[in-house]
Length: 267
Ligand SMILES: NC(=O)c1ccc[n+]([C@@H]2O[C@H](COP(=O)([O-])OP(=O)(O)OC[C@H]3O[C@@H](n4cnc5c(N)ncnc54)[C@H](OP(=O)(O)O)[C@@H]3O)[C@@H](O)[C@H]2O)c1
Image (cartoon, rainbow, N blue to C red; front, side, top):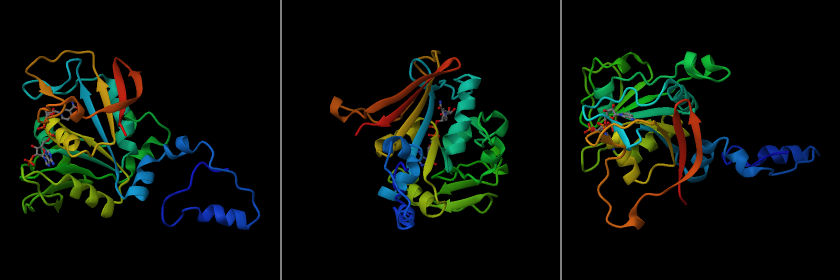
């Protein structure tokens, strides 16, 4: 019994055919949507040639992601932060913007002791690039991430003084890394299926405006951060409601003191 056919060009039903040729009865697909949903990045990559983009954000009740002074650690409680470890562990790469590095100096690795799954150590030890988008070369040589052997700094030019793997990618009109080229790089050079973005409003806004987000995982904390605090997405104003990006709520679940919403692009 099988749930679906693997779209990978090396498979595509070849295994099923072998079973049939050997006289084994093959039944399926059964529960196909649920089966394919177990590995959405792989399915997307081998059907449309692009990775699945998941955007993780933490916000307050008033829709803010950092205080006016830039502080955002921590908006959510420890349970929600542990939950994020699972999102990182299932991803092929974690991407952020240099603004987050400058503000928070994050680690962004998978911490096995906080990963509430079986085989946590194995999952944490898998090579998983942490990519910092740094169009203008502001990544600080003293950042905590520099210690991480999986760090890749993506910029418009290489910096001799930076002791990290670097990739030079084209930039857009604003001087920011071209996101479509970044995704191409991650598929072609790093064999990525699922990519997790954990970033501030600038990069989140660019992803949204470029229509690149497949799924948003939004942790909503029952806190109020004030009118001057930073928004979730830095996007230009829309003038008509039919232009407004629209997501469908796939799941809403309480995680500790917070709420986790899983939202998918409306087809
Ligand atoms: N609540 C949350 O979920 C959360 C998560 C992370 C961070 N934060 C908070 O967000 C704040 C930082 O916000 P931020 O907006 O500065 O951080 P960000 O979005 O992570 O980084 C923005 C920077 O990334 C670079 N970048 C490269 N390519 C880009 C592209 N295509 N589109 C947009 N940016 C690109 C830009 O610098 P170049 O000019 O060099 O290209 C840009 O200034 C901090 O206060 C942090 O604490 C909150």
